[in-house]
Length: 560
Image (cartoon, rainbow, N blue to C red; front, side, top):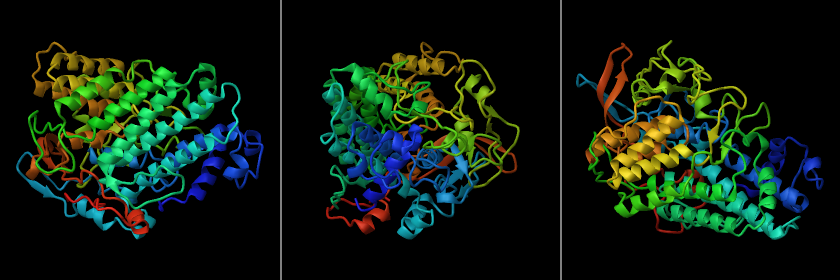
């Protein structure tokens, strides 16, 4: 893939890894020139390989290239997801954040129609150029950059494993590093396949091709690597050696809270959650205007089938459980892969709404049920932010919450306080169990899983299991809870897309019954929103120009 300079990212990975570990290059590697690390000079010991594998993930995958708004993958690419899901708004000019989440039009309660003069699809296409990327205006560039950088270093890691002598149970230690690389390759392909119409399968270090394939093929490749990670984990025979290597691969500051070193079985459950996610977020399950039988007539994907729901149910049943260690990230005072104040959607949305980069949306707030302690513990109405394009909002995130014991906290700018879920979580897995059960006819069972997540996050609302809800009522609770409990985890746009809300009203999409507050202070509660967002992004011009297609697969989404 010609977009990424392997030598540049190699040096960055080696050097920045040592900053993550908090030790000097000389102390950790004890070979080569610490100011000019190379594979030959530095990655020739187990310690060097572990440092390289760590930096390849945390620096190449989640830090490099995202300094235009915030400073990590979790502030910018994840920020686009939250913007397009209408969980947050923005008025900053950086990276098109002020335009990427603006719908084509809205219809207020009194019938007034407000039209966006610069629809999202046109904005994406007009700024998908190399020049726009250089100016920080090509929104669709960053996720591609990060994930292929991550994939490339994982390829290098796999190449190097066979060249290293390992201590202890050498096979178990080597397999641990292989599983690490396979897992993150699965992650990278999942991110590409879930967001872009087409992608590249790049499984050889420094070797590129122009053979673009569909997003479905990319997801299949993701599944291949997730399954390969699971198979490799099964081959590990020494738990001691596995734990020793994983303890070094995961930075110590990430080994707190729900993060840490997962057991082999826990990691396998994490893999099952990601496999279930790959199915769920890349198929349609329309629930438009309260109709579980809604359809989308024009899309870049297909609808979920009963067999798909059964597969999700099976995988999620064997997915992340309450108490399992998962892959998380934390900020540090220095040398981290994201900063406390600018590295996440949550930190950029925390504070007074008139001064934060991201503004909490009224549509997000309306997803809380009456009496939800998560709302009262985390949000305040001290100020009103007024804007016609991102819409007015009365809500701000209170930093670190209001102190209600046992209630989930949405935002913080304090060092190490906010926990980023890098991959799956208990809440996500449980809500997949909920949705699959509902769609397979087990409505009350599904509602029980919604209750479980609300209990886990300390919502304190009445149980919905046993309330006699119809499928429509159950899905209403499900969609609200996914928006509320999975905020900032990179799933929000995928959800709104598969439920049909981001599609044009003319093809069966749209969002209904929305709260919109005008700049004059009029509160609308039945507003219609026609987002009409591109469902899968075009391939960035930075790739297609430097690496022209040699296949017949479109690199520009033909449905828009």
